[in-house]
Each structure stands twice: as C-alpha cells, then as structure tokens.
Image (tube, rainbow, N blue to C red; front, side):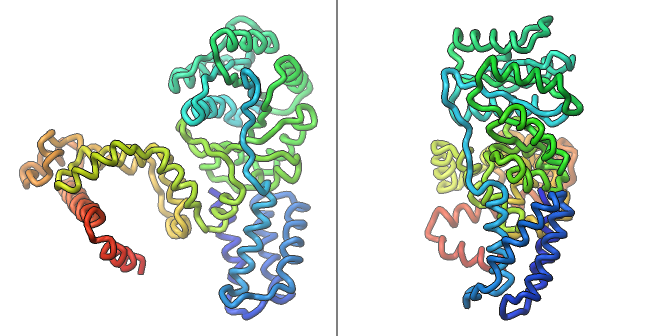
Length: 443
C-alpha cells in the first residue's frame, strides 16, 4: 500500500540528514522532492503545491529540539499535514433511522457490489445489525447474481426483483420488506456505468429522493488515481454524498485518490477495502494512514485486529496446556487460523513499524501458511497432541502425505519447539529473560 510514495518520501527526508538545523535552502530541496513524490502518486498539482507550502511555513523558524534532528522534525510536520489532507479525524457511518438506509454509488468496476457485501458483513458481525442487501443494478446481467452469492457467503438476505427494471420501485419495495422482517440496516447496491452520464445520474438521484438514505457512500477504485477524484466530484455535485469508500488499496495503488479526494469534494473517506475477503474492510483513520505512508506502521490497527480474534475462554485453555506441557499442533493450528482471520499477510506486515520497508521486495503470499497446515493435517491425532512421538519414520510419512519435504517437516518441528519454550517462559517467571532475548533479537 503506497510503497512507491513511501520510498520517495523517505528519500526526500534524507536530504536533511546530517544537518544541524532547518534552513530555507535545505527545506526547499526536501520539499521539492516531497512535491515530486506527491505528483508521481497522481496527486493534483495545486493540492501538492499547497501541501508543500503549508509544510514549509510550519518548518521554517522552528527550533529543532535536542531530542529531534531536522529530518525527524520534518517527518512529524509532513505526518501532521498528511493527516489533515486526508480528513484530519475518523468519521464513522451514520446508523440513525429505522431502518438505516445506506445508498452505494460509483462507476462500474469500482468494487461497489463486493464492498456492499463487506459493509453488510461488517455491520452484522461488528455492530450486531440485521442487514438487508438490495440489488438495484438492473442493467448488468450478473450484478444481482453476484450480490446473491455474496449474501449467501456472509449469511445476509438479498432482496431482488428479477424482471423488474425500475430501480426506484425496487428500492421502495425493499424498504417495506425490511420493515416487515425486522431489518435495521438496508444497503442498496445501485447500477454503475463505464463513465459518468446523464441517465445514470438521473436514476441514482431518483433513488436517493425515493428512499432518503441516512448515508450515501461513493465507492471509488483507488488504483485510478486522479480520475477517481474527478468522478467523485461529478457524483458529489448531483448526490451531495456523505462519504467516500476507497477499494483495492491492497493493489499497486499510487495513492493519489486517498490524498486528494478530501480536498476536492470536502467529504471524509469512511472506509477502505484491503483485499478480496469479506473481512477485508477497515474504518479509515487519516492519522494511521499517514503513519503507514511514512513507514511508521500502524500498531493500533494491528492490536485492534488481534483483539477482534481474541477468545478469552480459548486463551485460558491454551494457558493451562502450556503450564502442563500439553500444547500441541492442534492448538498451534487454531493460532494460525486466528492470524489468518486478521487479514492478508502483506497488509499485516505493513502495520509493523519498519517491517514494510524491510520486506518491500518480498512477495508475501496469503497462502503462506498452506504448507504448515498441510503438514499438521497429515499428522495423526496422537502426533498432533503429543509431538514428542514424531520420529524419523513418522516424519517421512507426514512429508509424503503433505506433499512437502522432510526438511520442511523438521523446520516446522524446530519452530514449534522454540515457540513452545518461549510460551512456557512467558508463563513462568521468565518475563525478564524473555525481554532480554527479544532485545538481543532486535539488535
């Protein structure tokens, strides 16, 4: 996410390395590189120019504290300005109304239908809402079918009227159905076009007037850069939408849309899509995104995701097993499954401060655990519960059954033993020793 922009900003700050103070000369040189980085990320020229002017005004005349060098101070100023550029503060979704009506808008191919499903899943699992998805794309043959597949996948009802080509009528009928069946959120997936046109705008405007939504969200493909911002402006002039959704942020995005859209339409980015899975949705936090762009990671989001998967009862059981030396591969497998639920691996690594930069050229596959899972599934119940029973002949059988090598089985066994020892150490009075080990690893 924003790897190219992050690299270029990092190089820009290197201009200040070794300087004892911030001067007009070294600031001008640094900001020239910052502006170039923003333009390469497809940020509007005027926005990039205004941004660097604000940074310059804040940087000049600042006394560099003894705890900060000029480069660090400049990073802090740029981080604060990036946060403001992307909205300043987190803005949640309005769940007022009975039921809450959320109208989804955007061009075809922006990921609107998939995101409608992600949002339904988010509101169902995180906010305990009874959600109804409504298929109002009567033009694209596969649209309603796609929504029904998504609805079945997440266990959410989909309202559709096959044969009815009047989306205004469908949305009104869906609202009546939602009230009759006790649904408290209605998400209406509207039709997209390949380009903004008068027919499309009139139709979505009519739906908007008919259902009076509490939230109108504009879904935009973040990989389209400045074009996405121009489309957002066209939609906002007609709909006056409440917020923006950026999809495909897990792809090779340059970041122009995320950085420019708030300045152009003066509407907050509310959600981001970070992968194909239905769980790949995040509330947009401008400050956290600014930190990630600058390579600082996003520990808060990482902890939040971990907490969502944390099962207190399961943790107590694991604790007892560790204390009795009974922690086995079945327990290990459960831990892997919890990590997988947290999101795609590349996204998670990007949240660890410094890790994104170190692993930028490493291809982190979402199926990174596939080999480990195959090895564990090839073990017998006895081998999984009592790893000490696994001898050389058993390793050969496990390797053959999992389609891996004996070396890979040995490596997993070694890692498992090390992890078990570390867990045991954390359980007992070895906390200080554990910290010393971690400090040594850090060095």
